[in-house]
Image (cartoon, rainbow, N blue to C red; front, side, top):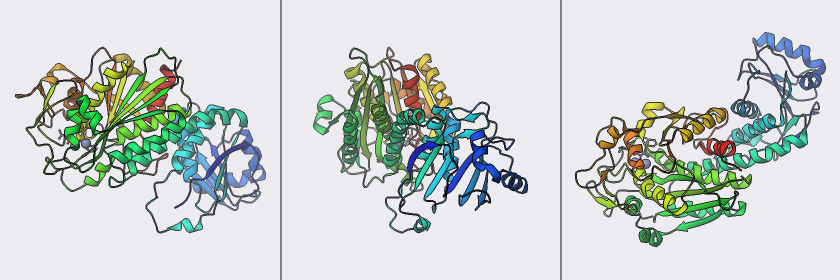
Length: 500
Ligand code: BES
Ligand code: MN
Ligand code: ZN
């Protein structure tokens, strides 16, 4: 195991040791602070670039070991490509790329936040630093054998050299809070289900109290009293008890209605009696990625003292086959009073959401509600892992989510809701059935089911994150499986549109 390196800021100065990482554009041009630090090594860099056919294309890099004219042991030049219109997600990526070029053996690394146009703006440098943070995360707590980490020094530090240290530190405060939320969400998603079952998940949300979040846990008795039978039916085949956690952050005006976030927290989804095939079932430890995002988001909002009232609610269950498990054909009465015929016990997430969304609306009368759920394989068929599916009963909310997605790189694509799909979930025996009965439009009928538990007077969006909540591929800002997807998106939504 290697600890994440310590991250700090300092003024531009040629470092006397360690690794120096600098950026150039697609003409291999440097900013003036960088050019000054390179000094007499400038010619060497140009020759190396030519020899390697390095052109500064975005994402490419050039490594020079013990470069003549510099005191550092290694110089890394990273291409930023065209630098005229870089935004938040691009600076995150540059930070991630830089972190990716830090060798395990490096004790001290200096990253120059400088481009041909000049030093990065404080906000941009803070985004870059956030990218470093996100990339440096590793989930290795269950690795007992060391790989090449034995080359790793006791302490590792990364200094981001910037124009205005004070201003960047200030801008980084909020980014650090958000990164903390992302990493918390990743930890929860990566954790195996034998460790992270509903009660343990609920216990772990207690750390949010330190940031000023009120945390309340509903136990079996409380949920039964509220009539959350749709949620309880999912958990009834498990040895583990179900839980609902309510988190509240009050950073806004007292009289302001809160914004509400609701997460699917299926700690493990075997499918229940409608059991899933064995292949790939291990991924279903991540079927609580929606809940993890809500927890990470609440942590982020509180840690950066967001000027908003926000509530986060998560439904925590384990979906297991058992002598006491729910059967296909069973009919349950949800908290809303609507009855649900269970057609497939593997369509469990919508059952959990039905009760938690209903409860959230009744109790908090929120300004809007957004639910996140690894809900359907069908959304992966439609959108792959690049976009989350978005369903909404309100165009303004949908538009704002799309914009926040573009800015952060956590992108959403709007999918339809319509009465024609709604008909597909009418039940012969109850008010509604939990699947459309066909694989066609599987993500839409799931959203249509949830909509039956939403009061249309409240703007609502459902994000199907089955494709984005966890990811076996690695990208520039995440090397782990759990992605923490949605924390940055929703933080940005709140920041841009709902803070006073
Ligand atoms: N948790 C799954 C959806 C899922 C699949 C998430 C792959 C992440 C990756 C969900 O509970 C489920 O099983 N959905 C079924 C619904 C079907 C039975 C109507 C599905 O998508 O097959
Ligand atoms: Mn399922
Ligand atoms: Zn599921």
